[in-house]
Length: 507
Image (cartoon, rainbow, N blue to C red; front, top):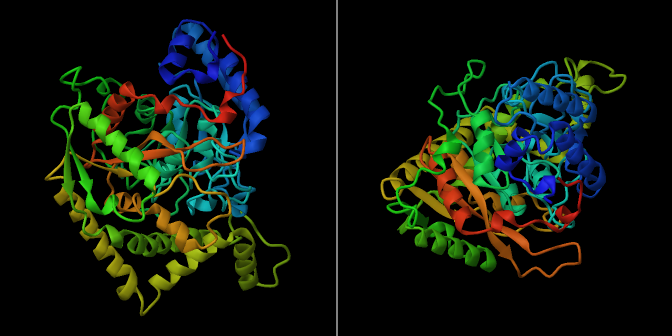
């Protein structure tokens, strides 16, 4: 007998199609797990029990009529940055605690059209500003692999929910690593697509030239199923690019040789990614994964990314500058938090924003406003944009020597909640992911083993380590296929966090 929450997306689709279980039974199973386990994790901000059950019944009716799609009736969790009609959309902030969206984000609409059943909205760093999921107005999310550990951010709620088997897969967003780093910390697979591949319409903006939606799931195959739903051009989004999508699921099996499926693939290894500052266990697991990829037929090529050290300072000028502009709309007048009894208009603005925004958001707004101010725009923001172009050129030059670039997703495994009080120290944890967003490239993180050096309490297992692969523009299929072949040879993506061993209904 198989526990429902241990089935992958293909198995869930097959089980629904063959009537081994109904969507209603499946949805009830996951809702019961959320009710039983999420108090320990705080991975959800809102759980939509009633609407989930109603949509599950509708999915079952579609199947009975013979009108179901492949994914009809499978549950999903949405990061609380995607607008959901009639449901609170908070972006993890007090500022939007009372905001009920009047419309669906395109990603949510596409998920609904595919017949996916929304379980609820997942926790996140406030306005996606953070790397640990500790800046949420609703409290920190806990890592299922160690309840005293962060799950990564800003998509930590989505990652924790999937890692604890509270949802089969989840939507997420990535501005500087916010899909890949939580995936690495929680032992999952997470894909950040090419900028413009997934619509940003209805996705609450942090930094408009960097934000990109994508999937978090257990495997590359599960991510491919969700990317199939999320990807595509959207006329409502001016940053959406009209580029053909692919059958990401079918492309996973497109190999030239069953024995050496990666024959001819050149994997670039940046000297800058494997130097001092990288945790020894993380480095060892990355090298172990590279050895497996070599055995699958790939060739390793050493490369240089000479501008890698400039990525963090450039990002933390550009992203806050865009945040300063985007978050100016939250003024206590039109929607969102409004202070009580303002004395005048300036008092309304000041107190509403002071009360509504947390410390990290205020910090980034101030940095961004300073960088855009008269007298500093050329010295800071404009110079950062020039560095951004150099970073992009650096990647393009590297791809003349290799097909994809490999390295660690994060310099360490998940750290303890509260361990990084210095914001700059936390920013440095994004050293391997930020440049990808500045260049607009696609990248994927997948689990490749564990950091065994941590000796924690009984509620903490060895902590997952992630490998990152970066590809040229529009190479999502290639990245998914490489990781899929790796996952056919290894079982790291099948490992379960201790909390996920809690049993539920089985079929």
